[in-house]
Image: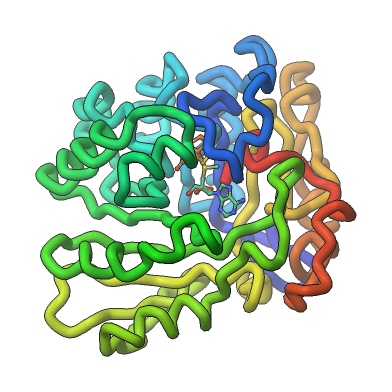
Length: 329
Ligand code: SAM
Ligand code: SF4
């Protein structure tokens, strides 16, 4: 095993998440807090060749899974070129998207090595979709999810559960799995810079499971190695569901993820205070390998060293981080 991507706790990082842009065509209030946010100018973003070269470097150190994210990765004008280039690498390539641009990118996706796509959708109600995202794209998103299913992509739906916002819809999402082979992932609401997070807005994994149990009998199914989700099935349902319990039961012990922001900063944790600029030295022709190594070695044991899983004690004001849209979820 190559040890360059192994941290002080023995965790090997073979999963790289690359943010293509901090730009987005939706305005989810829990992710992009400021409507007037200035997106990073294109020249400051990693360019196609830079993304390819940096990704190849990580692959040479053992990365075997790459997820493209953002912001909204498919609003980037050259997203198709990036997908084409990374499809040639020996990795499991995936993407997380809000699905508004799936139709315009369908040919690229079909020609790529991507087979599984994560789609964010927090509500099955048109009005609420507008309330959460401030954009009228609900029908388009549903159409595009169906398009993906019709083309046999494996579709995972990410639903961020927020008390008083969409927690009444948990079982509507479960009902959706009855006749469709979708995998719904319920995500505990997480604190990021400016998103007005409060512990009492979080619905924990156990609370979500209790709601599901009131209507359905579910069984636990085997989780994949390093899976952040706890997976479940319901007999007779084509789809499955999962919990991502970052806030109530973090899964840092088996974390294998590192993140590259759209402006070329390496983050060793979603909640890391620090980040390592590798794009600037890379552009100057310098060796970035020692920087990558020190970034990995400095990874904290859990949750960026910024809080722990006692929800009521988490003070979001004390967490130093970027907003989610600038990290790349
Ligand atoms: N635009 C794409 C999308 O929405 O799928 C990719 C980027 S988005 C930042 C990635 C994921 O992060 C989405 O599933 C989104 O719901 C999730 N996310 C954003 N802010 C979050 C928060 N505060 N807590 C939990 N999940 C969050
Ligand atoms: Fe955009 Fe995705 Fe953030 Fe929503 S969650 S604002 S779609 S980046």
